[in-house]
Each structure stands twice: as structure tokens, then as C-alpha cells.
Length: 209
Image 1 (cartoon, rainbow, N blue to C red):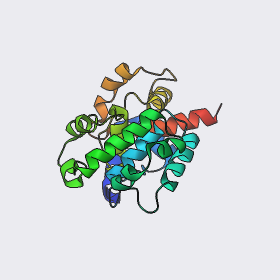
Image 2 (cartoon, one colour):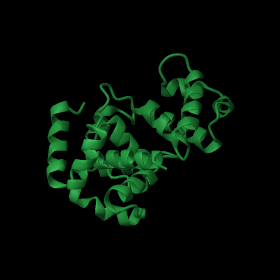
Image 3 (cartoon, rainbow, N blue to C red):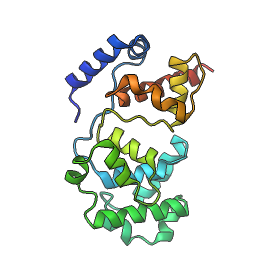
């Protein structure tokens, strides 16, 4: 877990170096994502797959039904025991069902061991995860950021990050994913924190409409 003092130090550094970040930190409070106490890569990645390209409420409902199919913890063995059509019945598309089952196969073979994953840097871990059916860079990045607490993830394809960056740094002009990449360079090695504040900025802009 990312220690509170480490977060405080990172926020102080960003606020001192970047006036816009100081404003965002003051407006939205301290950065809250932390590494999970006991990371559960299989369940976290299942959830990330389910949430792809869906609004939060719809994704949460489908994820809740998916959880309801299994008594107790979500494990790869239990997922593989389910009839594939039962998984579809929870609201997963055929592609997401197949992705969750493919992920379960990797996990059963011991390829989602936390010791192995933690040994990889961000780029290597993203490439590894993208081997799994249905996992692309965005899904891998959300896992790194929210489950593993990695501090330098920069999800340029995420529309919320792009919109928030536009509102906070570019007077409302939303950058493309390609444009956003180099714009994150001044914030290394703390781009995860900047991305989180971009989400907050995007939410705030939406609420003002």
C-alpha cells in the first residue's frame, strides 16, 4: 500500500512545481487510490474487463450479477466451473465472457502470481497483460493504477483523463490521445496522481453544466 506520508510528499512536490496542480489539489482534496492491502489480480482484472466501454452504473450492475453467480471469493476455478451461457446471462457480452474465461485459464496455470507481476515494471506488465484476450492497454493501466497503486501510469486513451486535462490545463480544449502523451512528461514519475485529478476535473466540469 502506498503510505500516506508518501502521498503527502508527492502532492507537495506536484503542488510546488505546477500551479494548476496546486489548484486541483486544493479543490479536490488528497489523492485517494492506494495499492490494495491484498491485491487480488484475477478478480480485479475480471472487474476491469466487465467495466470496459460501459457507464459506471451499468457496469456495476453487471459486475454485481457476475459476483452473484459465485458463492464466496471470485476465483478462476469457480469461473471455469460456470456454464459459459450462465456467464452471458449475467449481462456480459460474448467477447467479455470469453475474455474472463481466458483470464481464468492464465490464472489456473499460475500466471497471475503477485510475486511475478510485482517484479515487472509498468511497461512490461502492460505488455504481459495484453496477451490475455480482451485486455488492452486501458484495462492493464486501470489495474496498475487502482489495484497495484503504481504511481506513473498515464492512460492517454481514457476520455475522462483527456477531458479533465483539457479543462484544467488547456481552457477546455480536449487533447487527443496522441497529443496527451507528451503532455504528461513534465509530471513523471507521478502521472497516476495527475490522471486522478484529471478525472476529478472532468467530473467537476460535468456537474457545472
